Length: 146
Image (cartoon, rainbow, N blue to C red; front, side, top):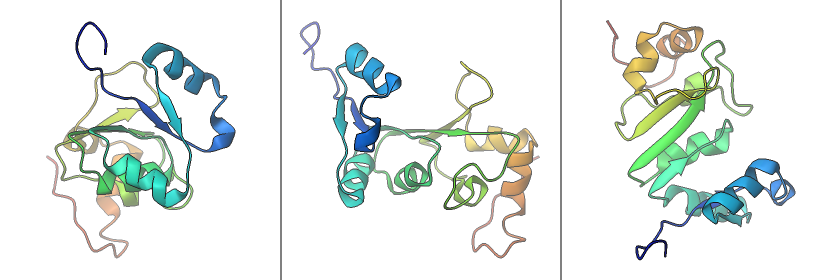
């Protein structure tokens, strides 16, 4: 409780090796964040149920965002690359049809979050790769962005 109201729990889902990372320590000190590092299935279960999900650059985070039942989702991206994540390139994982998601370009900080349509309208290298994914045989299509 903070100021008589219940503060939302802040969970950091990460590998045990990163528990001492300075960002993790800062979030713990500032927000009383708790660290969870379990099996991949446990981590995914916690992440997809978070009311607000803030993902990292990793493929695991982008998959959690896709499966999320939360109200708000925030994901980073790089304008000048398609790859981003190691397992599956970001442009293949980009979610263009979910209004809960806001994207944050890593090249600028701070910046107001962007909708998927705003990301695609920029015509960056990343946006071009997303637009081309149907040409690569992906079974989904992005709407044309004027």
